[in-house]
Image (cartoon, rainbow, N blue to C red; front, side):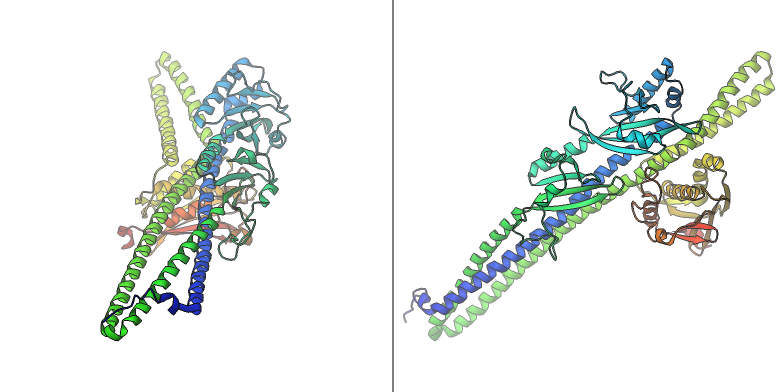
Length: 597
């Protein structure tokens, strides 16, 4: 028995129709691979751009929020007020300069300076340097006009000397019911811009831009883009596609652009990434798939021709061999598919873990920023709470010295007891401030809810007294819940501070705090006698960065962060109107010893 070589008859057996089918299959497979690879590449590029953009925005907003409260603290400083009241007093000027230099070092800002109502700098943190701001006329500065009218203002500029981005926070200094000057804090955004430049320089594919409210580029990872307008971006814009967010078919699609709004400043953050590599990879996938498809078809035709050549003599053996080959091919394909699926799952798990870690870190930073913003809003009351006992301590100490000379031991003992009481009061206040401002991870433990109410009212005691607000308490002292006491106090301070703000123009000012339980759940309600919440505001009250307050009075994060904190405790925070005011109510699970009572 003789056998023919199947390869010798293969071209003739294939024929014109077979070759046409072979070419059509290869072209079809290549076209499918090209479209699938290109579309998938644009989807992945779009997702990566959105994720990277969120990280850039969080970094920029965190840096700005870290210094936003500082001008308010400077405006309340007694040494700052003294130099504005007596600008020709050399001793007052020297003390104010040293005070501002100390605050500047601790805050990590570029400069802190004080401007009088005429626009002249009276004291500055860099008073000892050659480029000192002391004595300069800044009446034409963009932030001067708004701040001298009693409104906080902010301004961005680039340094003419170093070409670095700088941001100014300005706060009016009040004295005798009028604006006596302006406290200004200048910070540098150069570290952020330098980080972006270093990050984008590695890939040389991405550009990060920040546009102001006039669509002018003020910060850029590529110096060539600085001080240009948004019109320069349109030539490189990749228009949105139907599924991926990018249009792969656009002949001008050179760069992909994503942007997000930084609402607190009216800026837009834009990332522009070179998208030309997506199409190049799609062509590579198409060519590879075409070659593989052609090889598979040729192999299949070869095997079929070979099987027909020996069918007369080895029919049974050929059938068995064909079944064996098909089974091996299916096993190999299935093994490859399972391996690819497993690799995709592992990659997705890693991406999600990283995203969760970044989200947790961002939430912690926002939570700490919200705490610092609350401390800045309460700084006037805290200063008053500390300055009053200090004044009393000085008077008692002086009186005790006089009484000691007279030998009046009874009154000396009484004075010493008063000193002890005052120092304990200051100790409780400072300990509470340290505990509240500390940046700690979430730690759930058995906590007495009445203690959170007491600590909240202690921190707000001076503000409640100054604004003549009546506090009505209905608190069950025995209720306990599994929560983080420090974060629960932050929620209550946010709710109480918002209630106080809402009653600013109300004829009757009454703050009501109620703590009670129903079944296995504890409830805390903070209500006020203000005008209530409008329906359109009530629907958005828990949205991040949504605020009805004036610019500079809040980040719009207080209620959003409070709602997240309550959810971490296993509860819910809700808002509603009541007769004669508004109320915020949260529920928490009781600990077991209370839930079974």
